[in-house]
Image 1: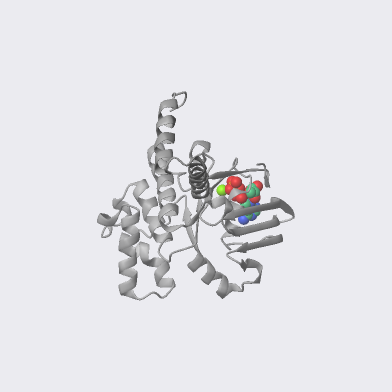
Image 2 (image 1 turned 90 degrees about the horizontal axis):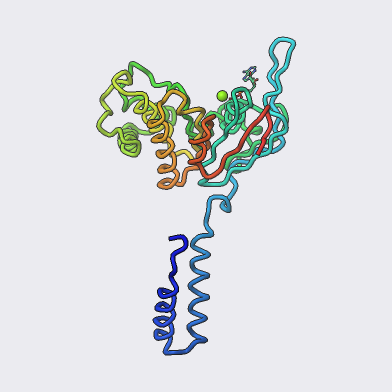
Length: 273
Ligand code: ADP
Ligand code: MG
């Protein structure tokens, strides 16, 4: 506790330590140094010093609409580390979705390079790019995109069907991911029987179906109230902690962004901080 006088506690600890070291002050000092080193090292693992899994280097993206062109990204350089939970913030039109789509291989940059898990996305042809998206990336969107005529379990299993996962494995996996997002008892339901928060949880379970390395979410809480939005961000944290998944989430809500490890702020197609 701040300001608490713990002199007595320290004295007691020193006495115990000295006793444990048979009164040898030199040994006690060595023990103390070792303990301090162990504490330092146990604290030194943060996602920020783990391997970089997303490299966005000098990327620009220009959309051509008729005779006009829109510079959506201007020379953007960003790195994301393995297991990091990053929020991309910025006002509408600042380029957040464009950046996320390029990282996920849904579109290509006009110039610059994007490497995701050692894969240079430029070099992937259509089939391999789809495979990369299906296996490496999990996407979550603002409007959920659940199929209304499919039960939740089938909705969750869709990416595994594309990956040609065997039915029994698929079923096991959808139960497991539904459990992760707290919907194990809703698998027989149709999307219309769920609340907005539950639909987004289902979409997250679907995104996890093929054990993606990276979860990309574009304004996933844009349609949810504050309590549900906070719960979804908590869920992202839980997924990162339990599975080591790297999470990149676009949001214009700065309070929610504060729940992430780091925020990347975008302004007018560039990184502002
Ligand atoms: P944000 O997600 O931050 O709102 P976007 O990345 O969607 O921003 O858009 C950045 C800019 O690029 C905006 O000016 C937008 O109008 C433009 N833009 C985005 N997608 C397209 C597109 N497919 N065609 C033309 N312009 C686009
Ligand atoms: Mg957007």
